[in-house]
Image (tube, rainbow, N blue to C red; front, side, top):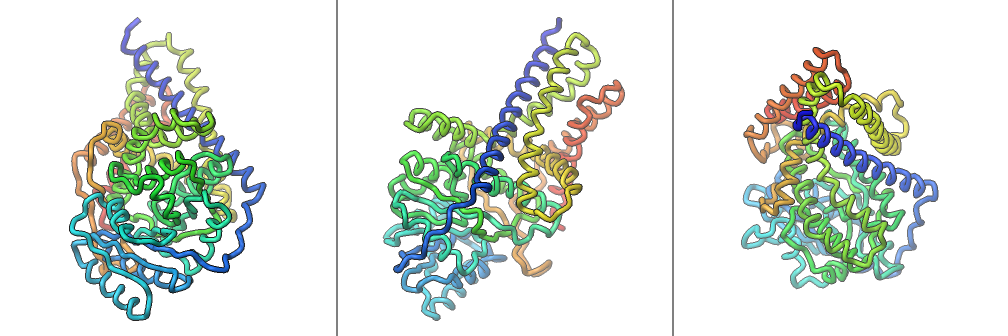
Length: 485
């Protein structure tokens, strides 16, 4: 029996087993989240008689489309003026600087304690800016909002009471809302995926006492927690996930409130989405490399260690998806020419049933986010989301591999469009049509070939997979080339 077909089949089955484990993990979080919703969220604590001091940090880099909006929104926070300090941490080198300075001066003239902070250089990117802003500051709590966020005026009044009953609460994280969810198909797909994280994963992990993560923005830290955990580090692209794990390993507790929403803008073009995905996936791999060993050496319960491992390795699923996709085309020919593997492929078909927990996981989040939408809209939208996620697998798998290798890369910001309308906003780009986009186009043709081969051999076992891959890679390639909409 030839060695190569055996190797292809074994690798493919191992990939299926990994994804089955991932899928079952998402089902478990769904089950926990539903139990949490059924039990009901803990009631909000009473407002304090004296509000603690809060520093609001706004890290910016070339955000001229949204800088005025985020500063004005934070200036409108309904909180005692003598207990509130806003820092505009501005690393920009374009018109953002003048726009930020003008809004800061405007609100300072009204008596607001607000400062425009400029660093000598952009060392450490966002983490470096946050750390720089804390130097010499003595406020008890630190709220963080990225440039695309528009917090409601009562945000701090709703969040701050959760810290007061327990001095070991280090973070209160809120759910992200979506200002432009219905702008186009790309924003709707992103909202679909993010809602699953915020309505299922964060809720399920919190309910079970597992580690969760501060999401980088839309939340508040206790300053003592930041200091005790070692402050902001600059050695990963997900400084939020890194500090979250260091803090929880030191037994700080995190509170997550899905009922408090911090509205934000979703990337509306492909290059912006890709830059965001690169940071999230590479940074997660860097954080896993940094903390997995320490997690297993800690005194945390076994269940917490297992869930933390699953959490930190989430982004690595893209490597498995990419490998499984590449293997699937030659497997069409193996299926056609090596009938001795028939039993193995039948078993693999059984494993494919393991993907059904993902259907349940995303359906539950979709229903929670849109309780009034008709059921018939879900299947097609889920398949489209799955297809586009597969189309991003090459881009994200590369980011994950760079993270595991420890290769340093710059922090590439996610461009925000703002609400000024076409022709009135600057079009930021993070890159052009490079080799990776060409490879995505070639892979679309590769999977189309696999689709045609399956039809030729009258073997439709991999036809759904190749259809999703072909559509996904073609869509990612198309939108990467035609990004100016």
